[in-house]
Image (cartoon, rainbow, N blue to C red; front, side, top):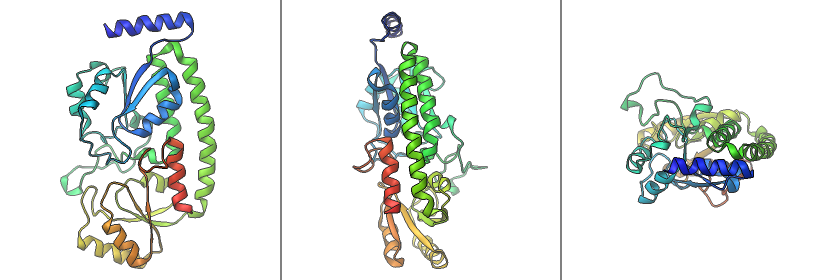
Length: 297
């Protein structure tokens, strides 16, 4: 019945020039929802499941998540198994076949970028690695344009009566975002070649994009808390390098990173990993504005 209702409303919309039905879009993370808002505007209803200040690997399912997914016309995920630990139970309980993987109402954004750090083999001895590669690709701002194009194409597919509307919004979004890319790139030029340490491998795409050098992680392995032995080995590395920054996220314990920062006089930067991770990051634009401002100020 719901599919028939959507079809009828789309036909009516095609005859009037405007579709009365607003697609219900659910995004796994806030950065996705922010892009969708820029393209869909008032022709869609979008909500994010996870909050921006949550650990994106570990989200506690809530009944409200199930309700949102059950009613969704489109589910958009980060992919690369970032949601593997929390989204499948929500999909199972929502019982909405229209947004399952492989359906028209499902979009995996990781399929539109090149992933790095794809392991040749998988074992628990490597820590909590992702078999498909590092899933934090969206922290390279240059990956946002292809993601936005994929989102617009999917909205067009599901709501063809508003194709010109979505395409016009996409063009406007890309125009402004590409201007921001030029500005961000100019700001980052002085940091080319800077040696950095990060806590978790959140920032690898950003580090590579702007040609900084990652010389170590506070975690000995992804998802494994730092040990005293690992910290000692990292201190030896710091003594032989000209470390500029320590990058830390908003959700891991900060004590080990703070210890290294104080002991060696290194700048410790809290890096937001998503829209809403810190109060300044309320849009996809301000996410990168904030990251780069904290590095260059």
